[in-house]
Length: 348
Image (cartoon, rainbow, N blue to C red; front, side, top):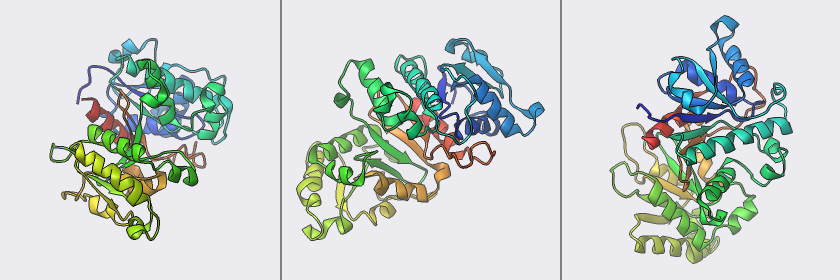
């Protein structure tokens, strides 16, 4: 799909695998990477290109853009980079540092603002390291990750308070989609975050954002919080007192919502293997690991993280910085390529 505006890729933490998987994606999926511009550090991307090629003569050329508007003139099979961070020296692979964290964060902020302003069609973010982000300075230390940082940028752009820009994380692959009621919280805090208002808001955001396979309203399944969805109150009353009333309120608004279902089986019911249709289009999960484990088990290499509720399209691969293999050339770019394809589809 041809884009009239560029798609921005943020480089992620320069000490991790983000630059490497970007270079591999440019090498392995040139058609998908057409019109993509990397917001990052030119020297870091050149190092990644050499790493992926194995020999300097085989490395894809890295083209430094002066302005984003120059994206259309980039030659095919090149890595277009817009330098929008200050990295005094190349980051050491696999090492947490404030400099790397700040470089990654600066790229995210610039890309978000450009996309919000309509200069780009969408943004795809390579992985960042949360500890490095926390070291990047007070302006970034308050954000647990990408989602919260992007939420703050979108709210500021719209002139709203952060709580007026509710967002949710969706993890998706070709077989399963799941949306989370809470994201980066301790398990104890995540349980406390299961409130009627928050569950209902998640259902509303999911209804507005997720496309049904049939083209109609998405069929939303809701996972319970407790084993066996509480077993009628024997294992907890959250399903009775909170989740079921939220579902009833959503249904009264015309949403196609069912549940709460036992969380150990609902994902199997929603799964849509190749050529088949699942019973549901998407599952709303009560907390981070409940929803992400089943999707990642089906294949990390195809998982895509999508932020719902933002006034921009943002996707990312569903894995982290992989500091343990950074710089070895072993990183798999499949999830990033899937994220780019989804971003192009959503932006089209």
